[in-house]
Length: 165
Image (cartoon, rainbow, N blue to C red; front, side, top):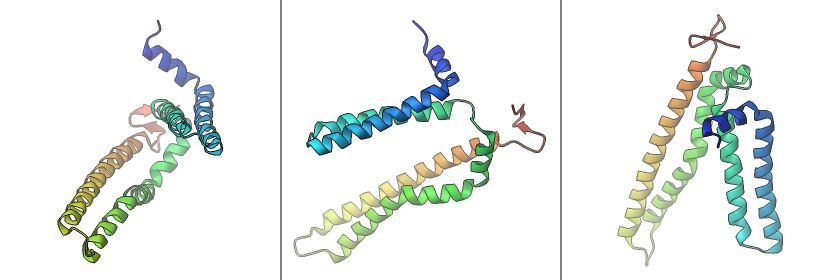
C-alpha cells in the first residue's frame, strides 16, 4: 500500500490533471443540487454540499501545498496584499457587524413582549463572536502575509535564501 506522502507527491506532480478533476467535482456537486431543486429532492442539498466541499478542500490543498504555479502571481498578491486583506476583512467581518447592529437595534427598539435580558445576552454574544472573528481574521491574514513576504523574490532573484527556478 502506498504511503500518503507518495500519493500526495503524485497528486501534486500531476496537478494539471488533479486540479481540473477537483473543479469537476465541485461542478458535479452544483449539478446535484440544481437537479435536486428541480425535482424537489431535499436530500440532494446535503449530498451536493458534501461533494462541493470535498472538491474544494482537495483543490485548496493541491494549490496550497504544492510549489507556486507562477511566481509572478505570488508577487502580485504580495504587492497588493494590504488592499486584499482590507477587502477580505470587510467580506468576512461584514456579516458579524450586521448581526451586531441588528442585535443593538432590537435592544434599543425592543417591544412590549421583548425580554430585555435576553436581548442583552444576544448583544453580548454578538460582541463576543465579533471579537473572536476579528482575532481569527487578523491572525490568519498575518500568517498569510508573512508567508507571501517570504516567498517574494528580491532583486537578485532569490526567494528567502533560495534561488528561484
